[in-house]
Structure formats: structure tokens, C-alpha cells
Length: 297
Ligand SMILES: [Zn+2]
Image (tube, rainbow, N blue to C red; front, side, top):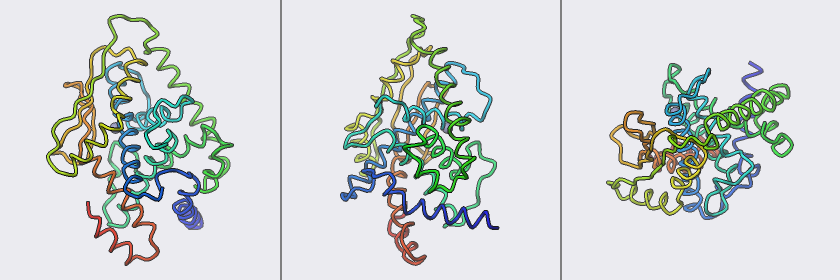
């Protein structure tokens, strides 16, 4: 019981401290722009997550953990690298994107609790709150001195935080290095030089048109395509496709079509999660409820 209370207190501290800790542009005064940055950061992390699925499948990379957890780790580590390969327009750094994506998982969890939705324990993904913590653990493990506040504010016991450095980050970092060394372009395999292209299918709603324009303008898919192409010796060409989806707010790797599918509905969901985050930070239950009702997704 004591453990649970402590967790709730620490989580609440984190929830409110987050904008200060990150000093990030996500909570910048211009809320419309900030919301778009949050959406872009999440789109970027999701693209990297789906690229990881494509990579594991296409290169037949042996993994021993859940593929979803591995894809989360690969996406997060791509953004924690020393080179600023994935900085976004408007001064959104790679670390900002990790925090924004982790925050989206935390908000999904909070919404699930608020709405009383039954948790899908059987799902192939870790629980959204676990995805949040795993990502923040990697962030801390990447640079424990710089992100010391993360350990305190997340309420990670010191011993566990140490594990984020040695067991989580260092191990994952070594695995990424092994993948690049084993499957990277430097192997010089001329028959394995698959290209990555980007397609924007016609959006069907005004909101999706706005989203497609924002994504195109930021060039994040082209950035991921270029980095993937130059880093990995893919056996075949693959395509990143932005499209309206009957399946709703999702993204996935389509193995037969060799496509990373990014649904406009998911990008709209990220916009909603940004607004929901503001609602969940309100003081009283009635205020939260009214705010969420105004921003229904
Ligand atoms: Zn996945």
C-alpha cells in the first residue's frame, strides 16, 4: 500500500514538473504551434518504431524479447544518439521527441484510467504506462548526470535507476551497434541496397489535410527514409505511406506490401493527446471532465 501511494505521489510530481524539467518547446506559449510540434515528435518516434519492425522483418534480425519492446527501444535509441539526425523544425530536439512520445503513452494510460477502459493485458505491446517508464529509463540511462531529475521525479528507486544505465541503456546501445555492424551499409553488399520512398495518399477530411501538410512541411518521413537508406543494407525497397485508414488510429508494418503505413487518424490522435494532456493537468475532476468533453477525439 505504501509503495502504491509513493508511486502515485511521484507520478503526480512528474506530471506537473514535466514542462519545467524538459524546458521544451512542447509547452511553448503558442499553443497551436506547440500542439503541432507534439504531433510531429510523436509521428517521428512512431515512424522510427515502425521502421524498426520493417528492419527486424526485412533483415531477419534475431531478437529474444517481445518485438514491440525491441521496436520501442530502437526508436528511442535512434533519438538518443549523439548526432542530431532527427531534430525537428522550431528547435524541437531529439530528446524533446523522446519526452513527447513517452508523454503520449502516459496520457493514453491516464485517459484509460479516467474513462474506466478495461486494460488489455493480453496485448502484444507493453502497457502504455510501462512504455512511458521504459522510455524514460533509457533517457536517464543515456545520460544520468544530465537527467538526474528524471530519476527523482519518476520516483525510480536509486538501485533501479542504476539498472537503467548499465542493464537497460548500455545493453540496448550495444545491441544497436551490433545490428549496424552486422546489417549496415558498410558491409558493402551491392545486392542489398534497398531504397525507402515516401507517399502521401489523399486525405479525406479537412483535419487530415492540415496534418498531411504539416507532416510534409516538416519532412520527417523523408528524413527517416534517408537515414534508414544510408544506414541499413535493406534487401528490397520499402515505402512509407501516409493514408486514411479504416482500421483507425494506428500505424503498422505491412510485410507483404513492404509498406510502413501511417494512418492520418493516428496523427490526429496525437493532436488530441496534446489537448487531453492539458485537461488532465487541471485541478478538479469536473474541470477535467468538461475539458475532455470539449476536446473529444
Ligand atoms: Zn509496433
